[in-house]
Image (tube, rainbow, N blue to C red; front, side, top):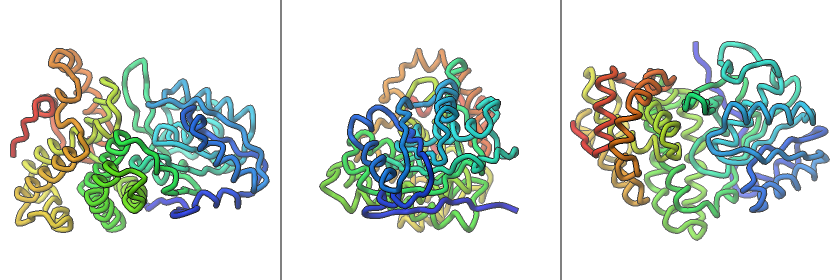
Length: 389
């Protein structure tokens, strides 16, 4: 028995106005200082106030939110006792807000103990709305929570099925001014979600179509959104929807090895999450297709993307070439060396990278799971750009 989880999704033009229909006493708006400065937070607050809600702000969320930050945010919630929690931001903000929500319900819980087994009874105190301001993480529709243990320099893949938002507001207006670099990083994150969700060992009939459509939309629209920004409203909208579709797909099927490696690279070298997983993606495709016959689904994926698909090897080659070409179009680094990682740093951090990747929750969902020696070879290939099939 398995489950498919999804919030109510309100999308399209003026979707943000749905916030005015919420009923309650008080909303805690969890966001970051940048979105406050840009006026997005006040825009959200205005709609909440139209519905009669008092609004309190917590705007201290930073990229790669730490265990300490979510404890601080939970104290803020306990002080103000909201019955709605509204997360406005990218994946860092939404993930942090989910963890705060859990600690609001269970104040004595260690955030590292967030898990999909225990019941936390979240909605006894508050319900949750996610408003994404990037087109990539899909966190608005997943129950995953990625936090950073700064002491151990480790990204923690946590989550609880209860911690899926009640409502996701997917309004393209919130991403029209997204800078090109952030557009590329988050867009490639969405593509990696789609590809890994489709090929994960947990894939299923309910997620396959979502992942296929999301991958198609990213290939077709990311270069336009990157190049033209708000002057191409259609591309912006399609990328925003693609991120949510990919979130629904991989959120119910899990990701795989590129995410395991990407989490480790992000924690150690502070690469943006989408850039880190995209860097790993072509190399993990090449690695996985050399595993047991019939263990990957690259031919089916390639067929739906109108790429060569005669067999798994041909499909993997075409898929790798398509991903690399897309990365070139949005001016992304193709190797760790191009991303600014030195050979000396990689040697120094290799044991930690291997340990973190091998213990990442997403690595075990890969159609082929490396041992430590294979993983070291793979990391050196990502460093140098050596993709061998």
